[in-house]
Structures are given as C-alpha cells and as structure tokens.
Image (cartoon, rainbow, N blue to C red; front, side):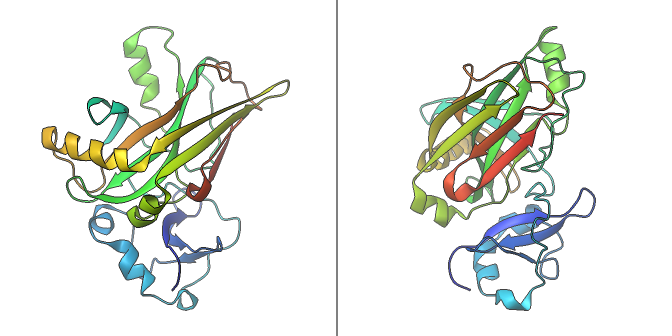
Length: 254
C-alpha cells in the first residue's frame, strides 16, 4: 500500500465497523483485522500494520457510508487553551458525534459558542497515536455553571473526525489551517484559524508530567473561538468545517 493510511469507523449508530481511508478517499473495512478502534488498537503503531496490507484484499466500504466517531469511546477528553508554557486544560464531558451527524438543539436554547480545532488521540503516555479535527458547539449558560455542566455532558454537542491522521502525516503538514462557516436562511459567516501540530505534542508532554496520559485520551487544541460567528443557531442552519488533509465536517442544526 502506498501513501498514508487514515483510521475511521463507518456505519450507522450501533453498526459501526473499523475502516481505513486511502489516499483516493475510498474506504476499506478492517474488521477482520481489528474488532474496534479502541485503546488496544491505539497503543500500537497501527499505521505500520495496516500499510502492510494490500487494500484490494479488504472489503470495500460503500461510498457515502456514514463516518462514525473514529474511536469507539473517548476515554478522557481535555480542552486545551494557551500554549506549552501556559496551559488551561479543562475536562470535557460527553462523547462526540460523527463528523456529519446532525445536532439537535431542542431544549438547549439558541445561543451557542463555536470552537474548532485539532484533537490529539494519544497512545501510551504523551505519544500521539494520531490527530483528527473536532467541532465543539456549546450552549451558552443561561442558568449558571451547574446548568452548563449538565448540557455540556450531552452526546453530540461536539463532533470528531471524519478520520484520524497518523502522527507522521501530521508532522509533514506542520500547521493545520481550519475554516469554519455558519450558514442560515438569511446569512453566512466565516472564520479561519491555525493550529501548530508540533505544539500539541509539546503540550501533551507537559500535561503527562502532571496528569499521566494513556491510550485513548484525547486533547482538544482550539484553533477558533468564534464569538463573531452567529451565536443564535436555529433548525436549518449548517456549521461546516474543513482543514485540508484532516477532511471536513458538516453539521446540520435540527
């Protein structure tokens, strides 16, 4: 197999299977090789073992199949703000949604903040197993911090994926430039930001000295905190995010 291999999970909720994404965008089912994209898979250099497999020997994933969450379960998630010398690492509650899963806002109000960036998925310690894109759409608190923690624990408020890039490919990229747009019936707004992928590794090493990290932990490094994007989201709006080789996300508000 030539080129880079990206790790994904494909299929409808409850029927996801591990898969790899090839350079041409096609996907191959790897469930005969690994049962899940979990801590055991993330601990080892998965890109080397999968690169050794001829993709033609693996079943094809149907074009257009749903990109599920690229890891079976987010072990621990930390939101990062600042840099390696001044880190604010806050636990993030709630499992992510798939890259194109709709976001139901019923009961969450209409005022939101939007944060996008790069998620580092860790192997053992501070080693990077791979990196993916994330979008975090968080309801602004209306009734104090306890209310914010409750709604922040809901599944689907943040999306991960569509796939995981190897640390080697991310190192080649250097910086991830991310574009985020919010489109509604009457308006469209765009914001852009950048994340240093090398800085994520340095931050992971710093955190590991204070709070030992393990396979399956995820660090969310923000590129855009978007107060100028529309805070008022309504059904019918669409939040779209793209970041070059990291792929794209498109979340319809329902």
